[in-house]
View 1 (tube, rainbow, N blue to C red):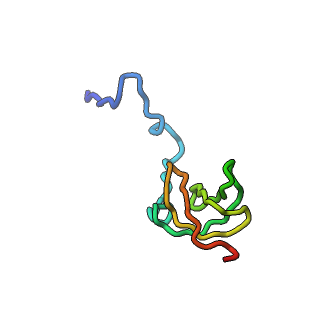
View 2: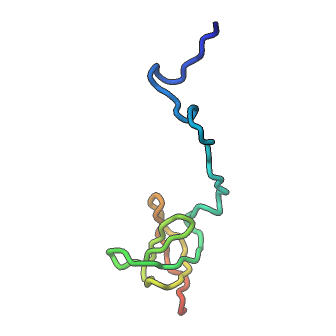
View 3: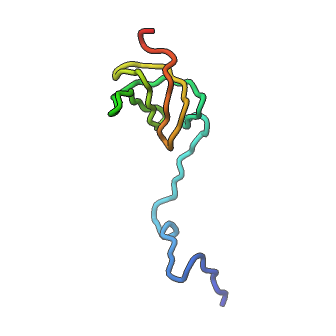
Amino acid sequence: MARRKRRGGPYSLDLRRLSVYPSFKPHRSGGETSLRIGDIVRVHILSMDDEGRGVGYIRGCKVIVEDAEPGTDVVVKIVGAEGRTFHGQLVVGEGQ
Protein backbone atom coordinates (compact mmCIF):
# COMPACT_ATOMS: atom_id res chain seq x y z
CA MET A 1 0.00 0.00 0.00
CA ALA A 2 1.47 3.35 -1.04
CA ARG A 3 1.57 6.13 1.51
CA ARG A 4 0.35 9.58 0.51
CA LYS A 5 2.63 12.49 1.13
CA ARG A 6 1.06 15.02 3.46
CA ARG A 7 1.33 18.68 2.67
CA GLY A 8 1.45 20.80 5.79
CA GLY A 9 0.84 19.53 9.30
CA PRO A 10 -1.16 16.48 10.28
CA TYR A 11 -4.26 18.57 11.06
CA SER A 12 -4.26 20.83 8.00
CA LEU A 13 -6.78 20.30 5.25
CA ASP A 14 -6.97 21.85 1.81
CA LEU A 15 -10.63 22.90 1.57
CA ARG A 16 -10.29 23.95 -2.06
CA ARG A 17 -9.66 20.33 -2.97
CA LEU A 18 -13.00 19.32 -1.42
CA SER A 19 -15.03 22.19 -2.91
CA VAL A 20 -17.79 21.47 -5.44
CA TYR A 21 -17.16 24.86 -7.08
CA PRO A 22 -14.44 25.29 -9.71
CA SER A 23 -11.48 27.47 -8.84
CA PHE A 24 -11.65 30.91 -10.42
CA LYS A 25 -8.77 33.28 -10.92
CA PRO A 26 -9.69 36.56 -12.63
CA HIS A 27 -7.60 37.40 -15.66
CA ARG A 28 -5.55 40.53 -15.19
CA SER A 29 -4.06 42.03 -18.30
CA GLY A 30 -1.33 43.88 -16.38
CA GLY A 31 -0.94 47.40 -17.77
CA GLU A 32 -4.62 48.08 -18.36
CA THR A 33 -5.83 47.38 -14.83
CA SER A 34 -3.11 49.03 -12.78
CA LEU A 35 -1.82 52.57 -12.41
CA ARG A 36 1.80 53.57 -12.23
CA ILE A 37 3.57 56.75 -11.20
CA GLY A 38 3.92 58.95 -14.27
CA ASP A 39 0.68 57.77 -15.95
CA ILE A 40 -1.63 60.49 -17.27
CA VAL A 41 -5.31 59.55 -16.86
CA ARG A 42 -8.76 61.15 -17.00
CA VAL A 43 -10.65 60.93 -13.67
CA HIS A 44 -14.21 61.91 -12.76
CA ILE A 45 -14.12 63.53 -9.30
CA LEU A 46 -16.95 62.15 -7.16
CA SER A 47 -16.37 63.71 -3.73
CA MET A 48 -13.95 65.58 -1.50
CA ASP A 49 -11.92 64.24 1.40
CA ASP A 50 -11.47 65.86 4.83
CA GLU A 51 -8.61 68.02 3.57
CA GLY A 52 -10.58 69.47 0.63
CA ARG A 53 -8.95 67.37 -2.08
CA GLY A 54 -10.96 65.80 -4.88
CA VAL A 55 -11.47 62.03 -4.79
CA GLY A 56 -12.17 59.87 -7.84
CA TYR A 57 -11.83 56.22 -8.84
CA ILE A 58 -10.30 54.69 -11.93
CA ARG A 59 -9.41 51.06 -12.70
CA GLY A 60 -10.42 50.08 -9.17
CA CYS A 61 -8.00 52.53 -7.56
CA LYS A 62 -8.69 55.65 -5.51
CA VAL A 63 -7.14 58.82 -6.92
CA ILE A 64 -6.75 61.97 -4.78
CA VAL A 65 -6.28 65.26 -6.65
CA GLU A 66 -5.49 68.72 -5.23
CA ASP A 67 -7.68 71.63 -6.43
CA ALA A 68 -10.35 69.40 -8.02
CA GLU A 69 -14.07 69.87 -7.37
CA PRO A 70 -16.75 67.16 -7.24
CA GLY A 71 -18.60 66.60 -10.52
CA THR A 72 -15.71 67.61 -12.77
CA ASP A 73 -13.66 65.54 -15.18
CA VAL A 74 -9.94 66.22 -14.88
CA VAL A 75 -6.78 64.93 -16.48
CA VAL A 76 -4.14 64.14 -13.87
CA LYS A 77 -0.59 62.87 -13.75
CA ILE A 78 -0.02 60.20 -11.09
CA VAL A 79 2.76 61.50 -8.82
CA GLY A 80 2.54 59.26 -5.73
CA ALA A 81 1.15 56.00 -4.43
CA GLU A 82 0.22 54.47 -1.06
CA GLY A 83 -1.15 50.96 -1.58
CA ARG A 84 -4.26 51.21 -3.80
CA THR A 85 -4.51 55.00 -3.23
CA PHE A 86 -2.79 57.25 -5.74
CA HIS A 87 -2.06 60.99 -5.65
CA GLY A 88 -2.47 62.95 -8.83
CA GLN A 89 -1.36 66.39 -9.99
CA LEU A 90 -3.89 68.37 -12.02
CA VAL A 91 -2.90 68.68 -15.69
CA VAL A 92 -6.16 69.84 -17.34
CA GLY A 93 -9.50 70.70 -15.74
CA GLU A 94 -12.95 70.71 -17.30
CA GLY A 95 -13.09 74.44 -17.98
CA GLN A 96 -9.43 74.97 -18.83
